[in-house]
Image (tube, rainbow, N blue to C red):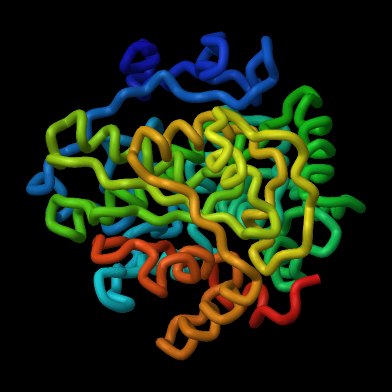
Length: 380
């Protein structure tokens, strides 16, 4: 760990980066966006101790109430993100309404930390790549922070998401290719001097934002967690954040047992589920990109695949897949219950609505608003 302040101004020091693959360390405050040895994503050398339940009363009503667990102090650019409602769905399954975030998706949890970090480091420009929601969130928080922002998106991104990115004043760079081609283009630009790469995959600050999803569940459930956390997985940012939070709460003795982690993928693009079925520690072979309603989790080669598979295994969970028909049906079912959620965001409900987890208590995240994509039609 780095020291607790910078030694001159009393500002809390940033934790160092650490490569989970080979242990390479990157100094805090660096604009480096990947491990210099293997070019893989980074983690943080950061082991916080969460505050007990009774210490949270009266705190700010946003994710920043969990200050002890966040690697940055609360920024001036907050839009009040976090503290989304938890509502019952059916039987033992409840839903957390993360589509009620300021930019209408759960990505605000991580984007606010990326923008706050960028504001502290003072780069010339910020770039991000996204299939839509992460890009809209980064654009919004960069606008709030007064940061120059460019968002790379693949051709075919929802017009409403493109409209939202432009509305926040970010430049759009539309890549004539798929999600992976978009990421490669953004990474090439990220190597330009003075550039902060607001990558929700490579930069671990994003994961420390998404983990507040579980801290909120723990608080709202009176200091406990459900039997199972069911999360959609593409690049794994919500699942890995959830695993971080569970580890923190358990290590601090604030939960007596750890919930199982169930990861949901679209059957059309399911490299992690295939690896799980094969008993592999990493993705196996090549997964072709295919049309799917769950565009936000259609990632053929997740960069943190090893970490994702290990997290699910360590938590005693499993991978579930859903068909296009199940996704479309689940979206309409939620709408009939008063919840209009984008097609990617209904994947977890599609996976468990018919009792796949039996009598286990479970929470599913509803990650993005239906207004971003509309109702699912025929895939492709």
